[in-house]
Image (spheres, rainbow, N blue to C red):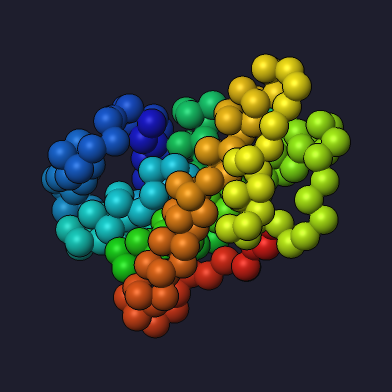
Length: 211
């Protein structure tokens, strides 16, 4: 949803229209709004759409800021949230200069961020799988007594025998989740992170995670 605030303190704030989130639609919108030679200042909330709109509009020569949702001024008790109300509020606040812009990373920084997020997701999935497998093993009364998650430990897990047929099925369902695929994925992310650290002078980082 797009809203427009006319210049001046008492300028009209009106709903413009809803457009698709595509480069073609964004470029068409900018051309239509700038037909009269007016100076345009765009803004939108940071969210899942990323920074593509900002980069496109900046590349076309327009001023565009990405706004931190948590820093948007709100009236006390105003809890109704719709696309129309949000668009009109952003247009009004942008005209008044009351919005706080977030730092927009370039393509290299954003690629590094995606790599760090993917690595963190892989590590968390590995931790969950290991905890599930450890809980299953303890419920079955199987104690290892040595450092876990080594090659020797994995061979020990693979050689476990049970009296009932159901536990081995549950073990087989849990073990692959912890196996080479997830561990290898984490190691691959670590290698890529170090190899691509030179992509940007200000790399996005994540704290080390140990299971």
